[in-house]
Amino acid sequence: MLMVTQQDKIISLKKRQAQLAARQQELDARVRQAERKIVTRKKIIIGTAVLAHVARHPAFAETLKDILQAAVMRDDDRLAIADLLLPQAAAASGAADKAAE
Image (tube, rainbow, N blue to C red; front, side, top):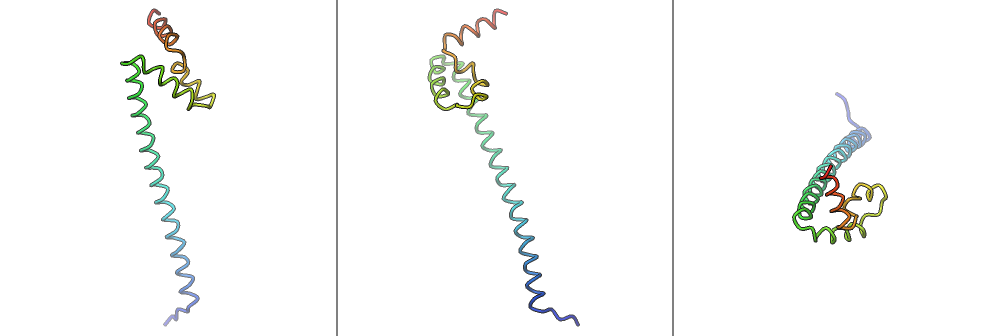
């Protein structure tokens, strides 16, 4: 009969502990990924709603421009939303120019 020593029990428990820690890390990563997906979806929905509101209420475009001017700092980001950062008259003129083409 094989006799299990205290040291063997400790080794076995440490191995199990490492397995459980790895499993917990995996589950934590899945939770973080799911949370990121939810946040991204919210941002898309909110952005779509805001852009639709701008289209229906041109006066809101100026408010949105002010918000974006204050909040968006990275050059790449500002370039991506350049049409929203233009003064409303210039933006409307640009839209009219595109429609005429």
